[in-house]
Image 1 (cartoon, rainbow, N blue to C red):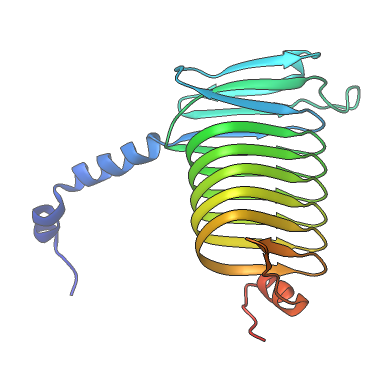
Image 2 (cartoon, rainbow, N blue to C red):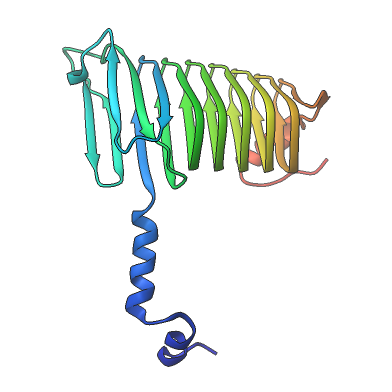
Amino acid sequence: QGLNEEKIIKSFGSIEKIIKEEAYKEEDIYKIYIKLQNNDVKLIFNNSKKIDVSVIDGNLDDFIITNKKNNFSIMSQENIFKPSASGDLEISIPNNTNLNLEVSTTSGDIFTDEINARFIKLSTVSGDIKANKINSKEILINTISGDVYSIDLNSDQIKFRSVSGDFKITNLKGDNLTVNTVSGDAVLRNCTIKNLPSLASVSGSILINGKDKAKSIKNFFANLGGKKHED
């Protein structure tokens, strides 16, 4: 049986109060979106109250920057006369445990250190990723041919995906770990993980604390299709 309005108010408070509290939770989430091409990006987290962007060997006007309440984005500005923005970026970001951070590059490298966040997604095509001292509820790292180097990751949900890029991870702690590669290798040292829902590779190896945990090609394609195959 469903709850009527009187019982809802008695249990949770007024409808207006419930709506207001949910809206506050959503507004409290700080979202940062960074999408670049061949630009390296270094993220610096500190106790400042604003985001600062500096360009090395380039022009800030080559980038599209949007900074509204709780939402910040920066993207390469491209057109037929200038196929890609020049210069590498250094971005200072306030530390915020309710931060949703997404960073993607084509060939640029991603550097970051000491993050406390709610959600983190780092993606490259051929660039490398160096991410250390990350504490987040969810961490997703994707690469095509770039390599990933990381020390000290702590998260409830950790997902690594690669085509030919390699992962070298030291000191990883979390509840659930997923690693999928095609030919890339993953070497994870000093890892404390409660669950391993998906570890799969076509021709690469997945070493966790010295043991190869990679499952067969059948498992890999089954996982891509959302199904789990058991040998």
